Amino acid sequence: MLTDVSAGWKREFAEMLDDYVGSSLPKRGELLQGTVISLNEVGLVVDVGMKRDGIVPHTDLELLEDDDRYSSGDVVFVMVTEPRDQDSNMVLSVFEARRNQDWIEADGLLESGDMWIGTPIGHNRGGLIVPFADIRGFLPASQVADLPRGLSSPGRQSYLEEMVGTEMGLKVIEV
Image 1 (cartoon, rainbow, N blue to C red):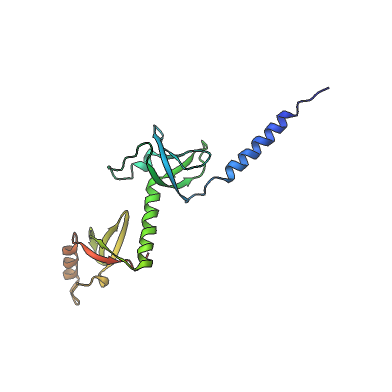
Image 2 (spheres, one colour):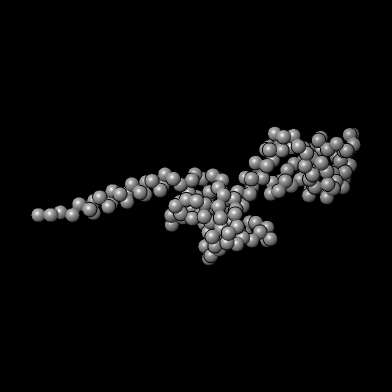
Protein backbone atom coordinates (compact mmCIF):
# COMPACT_ATOMS: atom_id res chain seq x y z
CA MET A 1 0.00 0.00 0.00
CA LEU A 2 1.34 3.43 -0.99
CA THR A 3 0.53 6.71 0.77
CA ASP A 4 0.95 10.18 -0.56
CA VAL A 5 3.27 12.06 1.79
CA SER A 6 3.78 14.91 -0.63
CA ALA A 7 0.69 16.77 0.62
CA GLY A 8 2.19 17.13 4.11
CA TRP A 9 5.58 18.05 2.70
CA LYS A 10 4.04 20.69 0.41
CA ARG A 11 2.13 22.19 3.33
CA GLU A 12 5.29 22.35 5.49
CA PHE A 13 7.26 23.91 2.64
CA ALA A 14 4.51 26.48 2.03
CA GLU A 15 4.49 27.41 5.73
CA MET A 16 8.29 27.72 5.79
CA LEU A 17 8.21 29.86 2.66
CA ASP A 18 5.49 32.07 4.13
CA ASP A 19 7.56 32.47 7.33
CA TYR A 20 10.61 33.40 5.28
CA VAL A 21 8.78 35.96 3.17
CA GLY A 22 7.06 37.34 6.28
CA SER A 23 10.34 37.74 8.14
CA SER A 24 11.88 39.68 5.25
CA LEU A 25 9.12 42.27 5.28
CA PRO A 26 10.23 45.77 6.20
CA LYS A 27 9.05 47.25 9.47
CA ARG A 28 6.47 50.00 9.90
CA GLY A 29 8.15 53.40 9.65
CA GLU A 30 11.05 52.13 7.53
CA LEU A 31 12.15 54.48 4.76
CA LEU A 32 12.70 52.79 1.37
CA GLN A 33 13.60 53.84 -2.13
CA GLY A 34 11.65 52.33 -5.01
CA THR A 35 10.71 52.64 -8.64
CA VAL A 36 7.20 53.45 -9.81
CA ILE A 37 5.76 50.60 -11.84
CA SER A 38 2.30 51.98 -12.54
CA LEU A 39 -0.66 53.97 -11.31
CA ASN A 40 -3.91 52.00 -11.15
CA GLU A 41 -7.32 52.13 -9.45
CA VAL A 42 -5.77 51.15 -6.08
CA GLY A 43 -2.93 53.66 -6.19
CA LEU A 44 0.71 53.89 -7.09
CA VAL A 45 2.45 50.52 -7.49
CA VAL A 46 6.09 50.74 -6.40
CA ASP A 47 8.91 48.18 -6.72
CA VAL A 48 10.95 48.41 -3.53
CA GLY A 49 13.15 45.41 -4.31
CA MET A 50 11.21 42.91 -2.22
CA LYS A 51 9.18 39.81 -3.02
CA ARG A 52 6.09 41.95 -3.43
CA ASP A 53 5.54 45.41 -4.77
CA GLY A 54 4.14 48.08 -2.49
CA ILE A 55 1.02 50.18 -2.92
CA VAL A 56 0.74 53.91 -2.25
CA PRO A 57 -3.01 54.50 -1.88
CA HIS A 58 -4.72 57.38 -3.69
CA THR A 59 -5.57 58.89 -0.28
CA ASP A 60 -1.84 59.34 0.36
CA LEU A 61 -1.24 60.86 -3.08
CA GLU A 62 -4.03 63.38 -2.47
CA LEU A 63 -1.99 64.81 0.44
CA LEU A 64 0.76 65.88 -1.97
CA GLU A 65 0.92 69.10 -3.95
CA ASP A 66 -1.03 69.13 -7.22
CA ASP A 67 2.15 69.26 -9.31
CA ASP A 68 3.46 66.01 -7.79
CA ARG A 69 2.60 63.43 -10.43
CA TYR A 70 4.42 60.16 -10.89
CA SER A 71 4.91 58.02 -13.94
CA SER A 72 6.43 54.64 -14.64
CA GLY A 73 10.16 54.56 -14.00
CA ASP A 74 10.26 57.45 -11.51
CA VAL A 75 12.42 56.85 -8.43
CA VAL A 76 10.57 57.70 -5.23
CA PHE A 77 11.15 57.51 -1.47
CA VAL A 78 8.39 55.78 0.47
CA MET A 79 7.70 54.97 4.11
CA VAL A 80 6.18 51.65 5.13
CA THR A 81 2.87 52.33 6.87
CA GLU A 82 1.63 48.73 6.90
CA PRO A 83 4.04 45.85 6.16
CA ARG A 84 1.10 43.62 5.25
CA ASP A 85 -2.56 44.64 5.12
CA GLN A 86 -5.61 42.34 5.05
CA ASP A 87 -4.97 41.66 1.34
CA SER A 88 -1.25 40.93 1.98
CA ASN A 89 -0.21 44.18 0.29
CA MET A 90 2.64 46.29 1.60
CA VAL A 91 1.12 49.74 2.11
CA LEU A 92 3.47 52.67 1.54
CA SER A 93 3.32 56.44 1.90
CA VAL A 94 5.09 59.02 -0.25
CA PHE A 95 3.70 61.82 1.93
CA GLU A 96 5.14 60.38 5.17
CA ALA A 97 8.48 59.64 3.48
CA ARG A 98 8.73 63.27 2.42
CA ARG A 99 7.81 64.46 5.87
CA ASN A 100 10.40 62.16 7.39
CA GLN A 101 12.99 63.27 4.84
CA ASP A 102 12.29 66.87 5.80
CA TRP A 103 13.04 66.05 9.46
CA ILE A 104 16.29 64.35 8.44
CA GLU A 105 17.31 67.45 6.47
CA ALA A 106 16.38 69.73 9.39
CA ASP A 107 18.47 67.56 11.71
CA GLY A 108 21.36 67.85 9.23
CA LEU A 109 21.09 71.66 9.36
CA LEU A 110 21.09 71.52 13.15
CA GLU A 111 24.27 69.42 13.20
CA SER A 112 26.08 71.42 10.52
CA GLY A 113 25.05 74.81 11.85
CA ASP A 114 24.43 76.00 8.29
CA MET A 115 22.00 78.82 7.66
CA TRP A 116 19.07 78.59 5.25
CA ILE A 117 16.72 81.16 3.77
CA GLY A 118 13.15 81.01 5.00
CA THR A 119 10.04 83.11 4.56
CA PRO A 120 7.50 83.38 7.40
CA ILE A 121 3.95 82.51 6.36
CA GLY A 122 2.23 83.58 9.54
CA HIS A 123 2.65 84.65 13.15
CA ASN A 124 1.16 84.20 16.58
CA ARG A 125 1.74 85.99 19.85
CA GLY A 126 4.94 84.00 20.46
CA GLY A 127 6.71 84.43 17.12
CA LEU A 128 6.76 83.58 13.42
CA ILE A 129 5.66 80.44 11.56
CA VAL A 130 8.26 79.49 8.95
CA PRO A 131 7.82 76.47 6.67
CA PHE A 132 10.73 74.12 6.10
CA ALA A 133 9.53 71.98 3.19
CA ASP A 134 6.42 70.26 4.66
CA ILE A 135 7.32 71.04 8.29
CA ARG A 136 5.97 74.10 10.03
CA GLY A 137 8.87 75.68 11.88
CA PHE A 138 8.56 78.19 14.67
CA LEU A 139 10.80 81.21 15.17
CA PRO A 140 10.30 82.56 18.70
CA ALA A 141 9.98 86.34 18.91
CA SER A 142 12.91 86.31 21.35
CA GLN A 143 15.10 84.94 18.51
CA VAL A 144 14.07 87.58 15.94
CA ALA A 145 17.20 89.74 15.62
CA ASP A 146 15.51 92.96 14.42
CA LEU A 147 12.61 92.91 16.86
CA PRO A 148 12.82 96.07 18.99
CA ARG A 149 12.87 95.31 22.70
CA GLY A 150 10.29 96.77 25.03
CA LEU A 151 7.41 96.76 22.54
CA SER A 152 3.90 96.46 23.89
CA SER A 153 2.03 93.28 22.98
CA PRO A 154 0.03 95.00 20.19
CA GLY A 155 3.23 96.63 18.89
CA ARG A 156 5.06 93.30 18.87
CA GLN A 157 2.16 91.64 17.01
CA SER A 158 2.17 94.42 14.45
CA TYR A 159 5.94 94.08 13.94
CA LEU A 160 5.69 90.28 13.54
CA GLU A 161 2.84 90.73 11.06
CA GLU A 162 5.02 93.03 8.94
CA MET A 163 7.74 90.32 8.82
CA VAL A 164 5.40 87.76 7.24
CA GLY A 165 6.48 87.22 3.64
CA THR A 166 9.98 88.64 4.18
CA GLU A 167 12.93 86.35 3.36
CA MET A 168 15.41 85.96 6.21
CA GLY A 169 18.48 83.95 7.06
CA LEU A 170 17.69 81.31 9.64
CA LYS A 171 19.58 78.75 11.66
CA VAL A 172 18.05 75.58 13.10
CA ILE A 173 18.61 75.51 16.87
CA GLU A 174 16.24 72.69 17.82
CA VAL A 175 14.61 69.74 16.02
